[in-house]
Image 1 (cartoon, chains in turn red, cyan):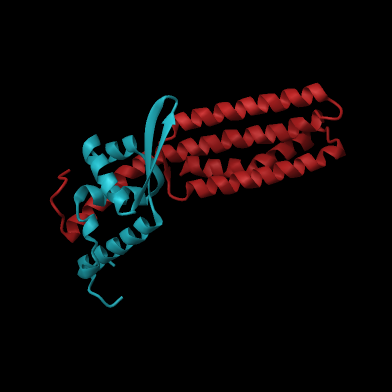
Image 2: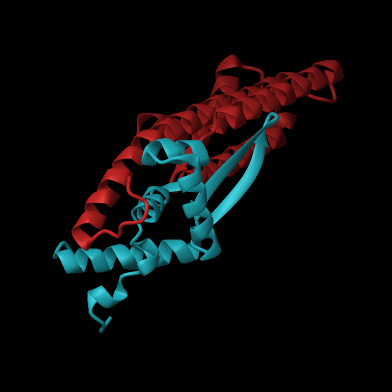
Length: 146
Length: 99
């Protein structure tokens, strides 16, 4: 690419189309990467919400802290791996991720408020986990497919 | 807008590399230096020089960080840059009859 020679308007539009096409390929990688990160993060938070119902801090102190410790380790590993692989992000994707993350955290907080109900049926726990994970799962799936 | 489209062209974007940088960043929230370099097919020094020029004019925001021990640089359009570039592209389309 010539660095200094100015382009006429037609040439500029052609160059723009080419640059956007080249960047589109690079951004597809960023989209898939963030999508998978959302899916794994959603499943992790959903699993935590479900497992904590069986390991309430007032009844299973050891189990509770074990789950929390594993959760923190998994989140840190995911974030480090994502940080190493992260190269680019399509426009608007950071906002989409933040929205989905906040929604999943809100659902997670609601699931914590339900600890007193002592839910133990596996179907209810799976449903609870999926509801908590849903915003990140849906957003992540859309990102991977796009 | 009353002025002729040609008068609304932004000379800062007439340089081919700068134009391509702005066009590439327009489609992204953020792009790292290596990805941008590969997409544009330019050398490190050329990209670095043109990014710095765009940053000086407040069109681009540069973020430097580390991944492990390796330094990495990311670039994204500022609000000023996005607005200025959209106006430039709109003027290009009007001139070429594509708007």
